[in-house]
Image: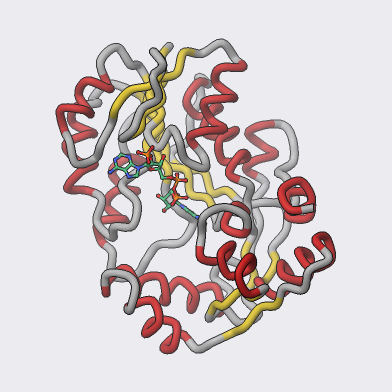
Length: 268
Ligand SMILES: NC(=O)c1ccc[n+]([C@@H]2O[C@H](COP(=O)([O-])OP(=O)(O)OC[C@H]3O[C@@H](n4cnc5c(N)ncnc54)[C@H](OP(=O)(O)O)[C@@H]3O)[C@@H](O)[C@H]2O)c1
């Protein structure tokens, strides 16, 4: 079995490669800038030839769609056609951006393909530590700015998403969708308090209105994407992400990592 890992240098692709290799499964790590390594392959959503070459000799695919777009289907649709007959496990998200029918189609199309699955994780714990506006705000100003109020999310470690992806790619039984969370739901204010406690450096959550956030984001991002992100904060504020699921435990046999353990390991 050989698994092509698109987004192979990213937050979920990298730990997925590690898990599959530990199980003796051959991986092909896709990147626009592949390392000089026989397991790495050039792959660009803007270059269909690179996609066809990356698929050659591959049985299964981990699919991370083009990032930062509200309609991935113009690129993903032809890729799915080129990958026909292979098992595809695709990264999606727990929430759906409103007014983004392309994202809904992406999810529905893959979930309906026999033997294929969509992973629907909630927000990543890595947003607090990696290259992300939340992590930047913590590092630069000791502040997290959102429009989420006291709404909670079931933060998940990307490594737990990768563990479920490894299962879905390799096991005999595969579900259409996996709704993935960590073990507890926390608001940004509660997350900030845990980070302050563990790092000894004050971090606070500053709330703003959804309208203010939309104006701020639209200065930096395409208008439709900015509006979608602001609507996501509204969805969180209204309690739409205040839940946990047992999927990581059910699938992997071990509990997902807690936010506290993640922050202690990454920032403590
Ligand atoms: N962050 C969250 O809280 C969250 C929550 C739910 C779902 N998600 C989903 O997670 C996904 C990944 O998000 P992320 O921003 O954290 O990214 P990531 O997976 O950490 O990194 C993005 C990956 O995409 C690859 N990539 C970028 N542009 C590409 C292109 N033109 N062609 C081929 N590959 C390309 C990059 O590889 P190279 O640079 O090596 O080419 C990189 O490996 C998104 O689909 C997002 O919707 C995120």
